[in-house]
Length: 438
Ligand code: DLL
Image (cartoon, rainbow, N blue to C red; front, side):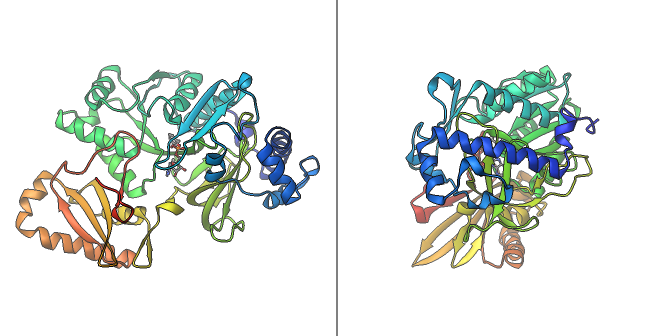
């Protein structure tokens, strides 16, 4: 079934043809931003890039990067290449500090986005008969509305539940027979937990798939989710700046997320030097939009870390795959000089059978020294069973963490349901060095 295509020709283009299309579209994008966005006219002039004579895709490295700060500094509409007469939708993503990033869409941008999502959902076997419970937040966040229109275009039935009200979500899932759910990986775990409390047997529900993203999650977490809900868990990636969800999606092989390369030019760069890295090397993802009209971005630095693979996939698709993003350059914790990613900790943790997939990494500085604690819940049974032996259990996890990551992390086992649950993006790190509080 998944060997059917929504747009076979585009999805299976040879790399050569794909590059030709990318070059044509990049040329148009360069002219669009040069003629309509002061910021880019200056940037391209300064870099000596002539948008009217751009003839080689490899010259992309001459184009300057765009950063989140550039977007924040041009708040709200400074990077728009179209007037408001042509912009039909606004979304924004709120950072914790500074101005939010604001993005706009023309009618065509919305149509392209919907088609992309439809193509991606189709690629994992979603069809007209499916009932999609869309539990991504509706509103300024791109998740809810972004998936909504693509799912409708595909012809599936969409239930726009948005996030939250978890008991109602479960009732709807059971009563309306949702076959697919879209939400964050942390929220589906919460749904599983509440469902269990309500006595729901997920193996008896029609639910068969979850489209999970908007935050990093490991393959170990995937196994946990699939086992608890008796479903396939598929990774979806995207960011507001580039379009929202729909930048890439895994196929059923679950071996990398296919980037919609006819709409986005993807590069992986060395975050320190800015140099392009070859496929197979880990670095920062950089995207250039190739068809966006309202707010096209050139070489946008995502800060997300991944690895590219441009080999043809056994699903038949030729669009390159990005490895599950393992985190962001700015998520990296530096603990007494050692670099640690939350995803490394999650990977080790999820292999320990007795613990629950709810954790928080607490970083602090005491007497000028960085400290790192891992708060993790254990199930009710384990908590009472191992009550006398918790210390030993903690040390055994500490040992596992040390042998994989090379740093001493103090494990604090917590009673069930003491770590905050999330309905959207989970907060996995509490960095008290930055003054963060619970
Ligand atoms: O999170 C868009 C989205 C909605 C993606 C629904 C998938 C599903 P932002 O709020 O702008 O947009 O956040 C974008 O979230 O740069 C990554 O750091 C992170 N992120 C998104 N998807 C994934 C994923 C949406 N599958 C930021 N794995 C990105 C890891 C992800 N990180």
